[in-house]
Image 1: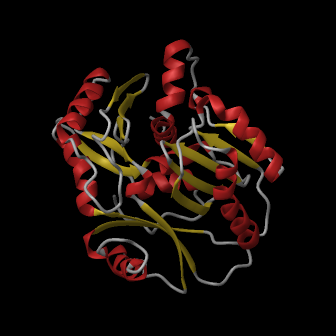
Image 2 (image 1 turned 60 degrees about the horizontal axis):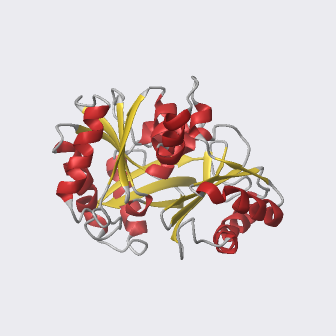
Length: 320
């Protein structure tokens, strides 16, 4: 994870995020380690390997890989299937590991070696670990219209020893993580226009709620839900996303244009109807296979739509 504060605010948000957590040259292979599986992509090749229950337990504080051998085996298998033995990969890790904050400053130093200590000082009471044992990345973005003068800073922070566990799993397979990014941030390449859009993405029991508008990430929430998609009530989803909507309306002085739902599986229609009735906006499904430049069907399409939304997002983001 790198820190680049000089990316122009006029550059669209997805491209600035890519540059923010980027390494050059762009890794041809994307790899995601999640709680349930490991997936890799070197388009059009892609592969998914399930993980044994409990092998990976995402947490911002504790070590995540309870069974490094099982995770390492899955990493090697998917990389072999996509012929991903190159030097660098883009590594996507669970949202729970990376804390994301929107911070306001009157001024911020231009040099990252001066800005990061200031960011760590601001985050000291907001994260459940020692801020000195962290990897910090940030990017300056436009703030709310008519808001206070100063600088709006989108900041990501993760405990270094936790990130290193994921990196070591990749290194043991003979590759180097050239980019490390949380999985939902990688999906933001799907939302490149000016329309205010809310993304509600459910992975297991973790719901990440993001509102993007043009060049700005306006809201970011990552919460543990009472159940996964099969057993979650639509009302529980509404209760979680409504504070994000209210905050956006109050702070950004506007309404949502659309809601995009991801991770709700066969119950998508049930959740779509509930969201549209409550928020009075259109709700759609995030379908990564529909965004690809070539037709894909059958088992491959089902795999892409179920497992690869973040990796396809990364691929779209960087134009691989």
